[in-house]
Image (cartoon, rainbow, N blue to C red; front, top):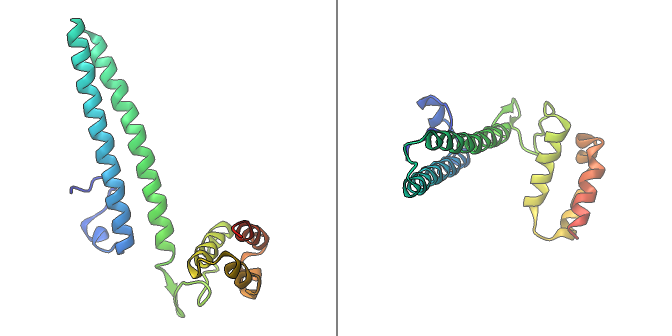
Length: 163
């Protein structure tokens, strides 16, 4: 599979984690599907106009431009989503003198409050599938109170909604 959804050097691509590689491959597959749909739609448009006897008109070129623009917009959305996913995934790959950032062992205090919220939510969603045990563990987490600040109650209510 040719990867052209992101502009990366070979070295940067080789340094991606397995999770990030899977994200890139999934995004590339979506891009390939969008381009395939675009090509199919162009072919159908040509055949339709050919059947009407106007395949050589400017209408064909105009319709091709519309199809290309719509496909590029879809690809742009996929590309932006991939960039956000890669950026979020790389948050956990950094670290400090205490080792890589991981909640609750070594929380990253340089994150914004909303990023902290996502990290803690991800941690608790992975701890157990039992919603009540998850909520009880979160309620006893004193680090989360100071780490999340005003978002503590929001996450508490979210976890309580799963019960």
